[in-house]
Length: 201
Image 1 (tube, rainbow, N blue to C red):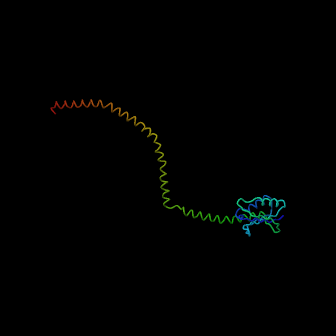
Image 2: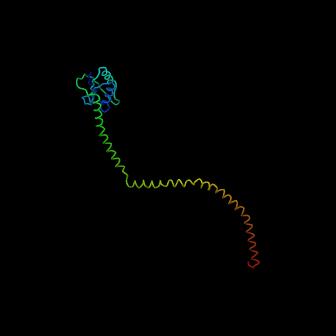
Image 3: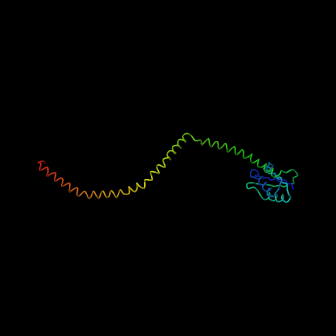
């Protein structure tokens, strides 16, 4: 059974409609199938041609009437008998791959040009290189700094005893001062006595 299907609407192109129909045809084991985007008086159109077992074509038509690609907007679907040749589904799949590859080439070329522009705009200047070298030089000091900071607990332990040592010194000073004052008075008295003996005033 051969069939021509015309699908029209405001959005039936660039929504994957042909690949959607191809998938339905393959799932129903239809061996002869092709679909093409066209323009019609009603706007966008997809023409699909199928040739296969009558039961498979009926199931295919029922799915085409009830299922749509996610972003499509369909106004009308018409089924007509068809007498012409229909492409083998494998050949059509290769045809679709070629179309997609052709579209992808221009996108890939645009991406390549964009990447070149990005590289040009982010080129490393001599000044940036010098700054990177300075950062690397400074980060080379990190192991040395880490080695020095290993002594911090020992330094802290030594400085923790400073208040205790100061307290001991103060205590010694308090102990010495009374004796020192008495000794100083004694020394002064001895000096006066020596001066008197020598007749010095």
